[in-house]
Length: 148
Image (tube, rainbow, N blue to C red):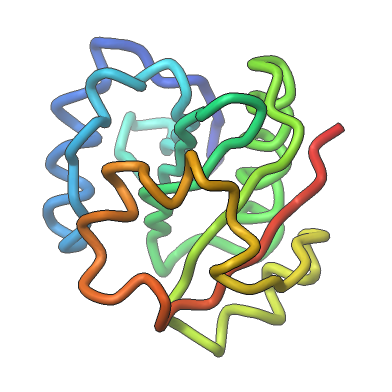
């Protein structure tokens, strides 16, 4: 099996929506930001991974990271490199992510993300609808990547 990456299009929305719902991830805002999503699929067109970002000012927030268990770490690295490049093309200078899994911090550090505090998030991101739906955003780990 050979995986391929691509920037999502309107035609991919329904597949992404089902993929995220199956993983228990919110699909709010995905359709509006579909061109800010990268997907990985198999040769047969099966969706294997997705990640997107939403931009606020010069900052962006990663969202909707879902990865099939069958993917290798090198595939996930490629997915991250692709979303960072896409964010840069959209003028994002700092890319943030939030996770509630301490076990994933090491992986994100390997991707050159650095840990910071919730209070260090730019105000525009703190007000973002994606963060507002979190039960308690101050209980998550916050990391950032300087995209420029």
